[in-house]
Image 1 (cartoon, rainbow, N blue to C red):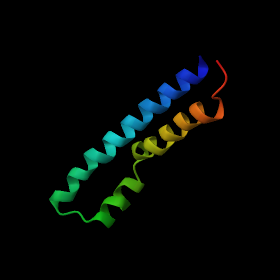
Image 2: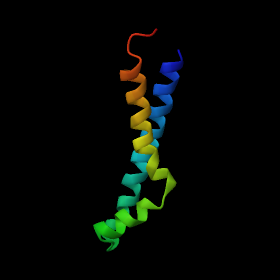
Image 3: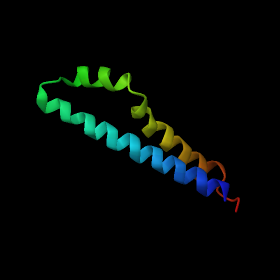
Length: 68
């Protein structure tokens, strides 16, 4: 049961981080370059939710696949 919760938390974090990254891409048509975009998202904590969420999902799926 705990692994399902860990997977769902990871999924929520990954969705939140991915949506945030896509939302910040709206700065690109406003004249911001890709380098400036990457520098901008480097300083935002909510953009790190995507890799953390993917890590939690992978941990729940691959680290403990046989445990009920």
